[in-house]
Length: 277
Image 1 (cartoon, one colour):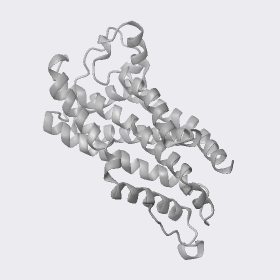
Image 2 (spheres, helix red, strand yellow):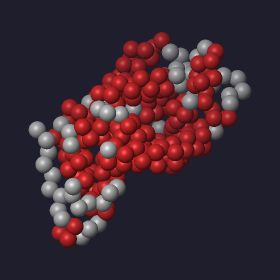
Image 3 (tube, helix red, strand yellow):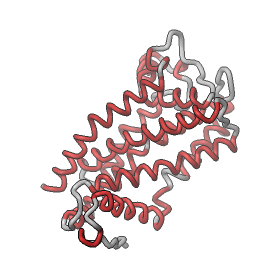
Image 4 (cartoon, one colour):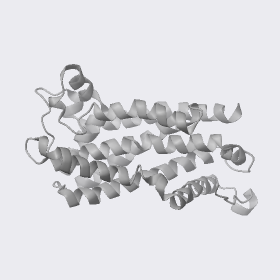
């Protein structure tokens, strides 16, 4: 059953673009609250990954200068935030396929309200797994060792990366014809990117060309940046690691800004085309 949301007329709501964005975001948040099972990918799945790798695979993976569970958390955070592409892409594709976007366009609301509302709701959706994984990680043996300031910087970096992923999601949700197509393409592209990285194993243990790809993969540098900021072990990075590994925070921020600069205009253009054809 679809959720009916009352969007007041401009005179009644004061004609605020921010008000329109909040109406769309509130609609998406209500969907999350009324369909908690749809949040399994950002609630149960991250916790399941933490428990599986900590207790099933952790005993077989050795990490220098610390335990595997502290090494693991940076990678789990990075992977889950990158998977945030799925949420906004599927939500936007679903709204396009069920006519919700057409109904929004018939209402007196700001043109950018739909994308802005989706972005706000997705950013909130991204904070759920971060909080849950932090709690779960502390339970299984993870710890924050370098103080509050660096920990806050780590959480800020996660939110910055999450914001960048939102625009990739908007671009995919605007270009692909259905939620099923979004899931298929996103899984095929995003899943290997998060595994050919230092997400679960030290990058120095990867063979040949895979190690080179992993060293320049931003998911690797996000993982390493989080490990560094939380004061967790980085594992074997290989001899003479390349610049991205030596400067993981800066390299990750460059990628996040670059993704927003490139993907945001393309996403807005693709969204306009998809809603005017």
